Length: 300
Image 1: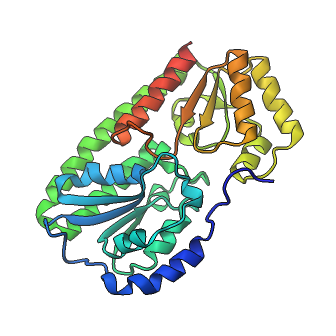
Image 2 (image 1 turned 135 degrees about the vertical axis):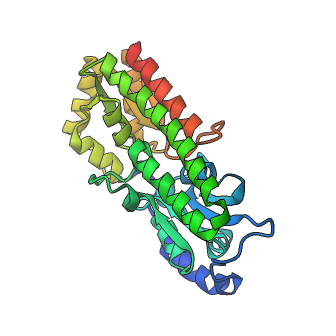
């Protein structure tokens, strides 16, 4: 059985029911703005909401549908206020790639909004949907946000472009910091409870030796094959991996066992998340904190 909440639970039924209730709330408002003159923008999660805010600055009012670090984007159930927010949005930004299908269904009800999809913009050639961990992808998304906002509010286009440039400079610094981890410790092997930080590990030049069967089972919410779990336990107990990276937003008996085994064996555990954790104010500070924790663990 699966111990994680079922993904996309009741989303289709909820959105279908909401459609009738919000049809009269607006038609996208593509030419207008908020009462303060700001562009209305809605993101599926606060990760992408943070990027929208960084590029839009004071010219954009950003709403993030998921902004609770305890929420699971895969199984999020939409609310009437979510539907209203999307209906009134001039710009929407979702992750895509099958990650936040609830948001795709919501934006289908806002045909006049300018829709941006990070996974499509990133075009990584990789089927891993967690593209906010790919710094080149985040750069592309920032540029697309600036371009789209500039079309909606031409008199602020240069401001949006300048904001995107400043943001990308900080993203570049994140990438530089991550890349030095593996450069200082070549051939470092790590294990992950779920392949969420896939792109970050590639930037950091760390080798993920997690058995494919283990990763697929956790990600697909199925039982981990005994042989795969035994291999994971052996990698940890024999200290054949330097660090275990744990997605703190997917907690199952199996992932808990793996984390406890790592701690018992003296293998550092680094937590990662899919949305901004409590205390993180924006994308840069959040990602910088995770990279710092990873670097410290590898250096230990």
